[in-house]
Each structure stands twice: as C-alpha cells, then as structure tokens.
Length: 286
Ligand code: SF4
Ligand code: SF4
Image 1: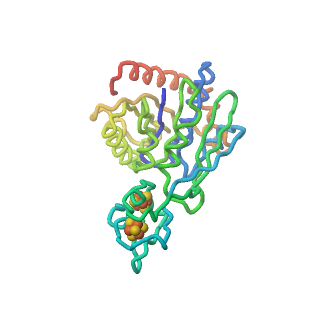
Image 2 (image 1 turned 60 degrees about the horizontal axis):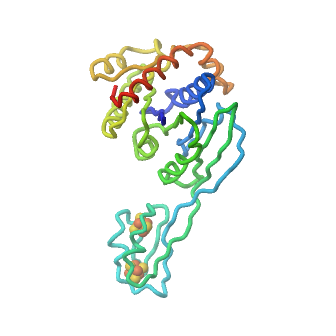
Image 3 (image 1 turned 135 degrees about the vertical axis):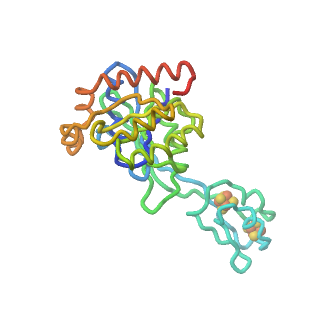
C-alpha cells in the first residue's frame, strides 16, 4: 500500500505525520518504508535518523548538438514545447534547465545531429532506521526540475508492505508526481484561514487525480472551526486530529517529536490506519 502525505502549504506538520505514521506502523510489526519526495527541501531523515547505506547519483538526458552535422532546418526548435532548444544564427542552442527530456528533438532531426547526454540533477539516498526503510531524493543546488527525480525515488524501498510517501508542499507538478498512483492521500492541514485556503486546493487536486483522500488536522484546537466546517460541507473525512501540544513543539525543536506523538496520540494513528485500510479495501473514496 502506498500512502502519500501532502499538504496544501508548508509548515502544517506533514513530515511529522509521515514519520509518526511510519513509527506507529513499525511498532505494529508492519514492514514499512518512508520515501522523501520533497526533493527540494528533504527533511524526513532529520526526524527519522536513518543510517544512509547507499547514495546514487541521478541524471536526466538532455540534447547535445553536433553543429558540424546540423543543417539549420529548425525542426528541433519548432518541436520543443518548452523553448529549451532555439536557433541562434541557424545553429541550435540548448538550454538544459528548460529541457523536459522528452527526446523529441533527437527524433525529428533529419541529420541525426542531436544525441542525448546525461546531466546530473541530484542524488538518491537509501538507508534504514529501526527496521524502517528510507529512501530520499535531494535535488542539486541550482536545479529546479524536480519531477524526474521524484519519479525515480518512488521506485526505491519497494519491498515494504506499506510505503509512506512524503510529498512536497503545495499543489503543483512535484506534488502531483509524488501522489500519482498512490492508494491513499493524507492531507495534513492546520485550523487557520491559511490552512483552509490551501486545503481546498489540495482537495481539488486529490479529486482531479481520483485519489481516495482524508484530512489530518494538526494543532487541532488552536485555531478556528473553518477547516471542520469545510470538511463537513464538502464531504471530506477528517481521519485524525493531533491536538495542539506544547510538548510536541519542544520535541520537534530537538528533532524527536514523532516518538512523543505516537506515545501520546497513538490511538489517532490507529484510527487513521483503520479508515485508510477500509477505504482502500473497498476501493471507495472518502
Ligand atoms: S528533449 Fe524535448 S524538452 Fe528537451 S530540448 Fe528536446 S524537445 Fe525540448
Ligand atoms: S533539427 Fe537537427 S539539423 Fe535541424 S536545426 Fe535542429 S539540430 Fe540542426
């Protein structure tokens, strides 16, 4: 089972929920892994503390042009939907940062002047912490094309019964790539107007992707009732509430809030997993 954990905005406690859920499941004797798909700002392992056993470089393919073979026909420029290859004085100029590695320009080149070259964009780390398998992507500084790295890291740590996929914040392409194909999407929010605004967007995304989803309200009791009202009106289930608790904030600052959360609110995670399991078993959306 692949459970993606996302939030419409950063700072809601998404990663805290991901790691806490993994600890809870490991405590129940399940084979579990956590995949950090927040490749621009990976922080799962700050809380998980996995020992990294392996680091793989990750590269994408970008075009490389042999100017001597090029006849300046411009077919590559016409094809590229991302303006990643343009003609300057009848010679193609490739902008690797804009390239989506579709390979189209190589296919249309009549002179076979284009070949593909590997360009490193990040790394993938794998390890283990207390029986929990970990895999995390890390985009290189200056790189911004995160979906290919996210897609790759999702192929790691596949042997577990349950994989927790920690998504980037927001609702843009990296989140869609992270959540795509998952069995259930957990949407973490907070009871504030900002939390509500971004939760609406996240629910729209989940519905557009056809993903079963439910809401976890973090710091419950500290804000207003807007999130609860919205969930009730729009038929979105609240599958867990983690109360506002100063002790969690204190443990968070030391990087160890997950064990405190499980010790104090383990029943919330137990109920959440029951809801998720029932939903995915039925193939229904909640
Ligand atoms: S590989 Fe695709 S995206 Fe990249 S330059 Fe060629 S056509 Fe454009
Ligand atoms: S399609 Fe090939 S031959 Fe035509 S401009 Fe591009 S690289 Fe040159």
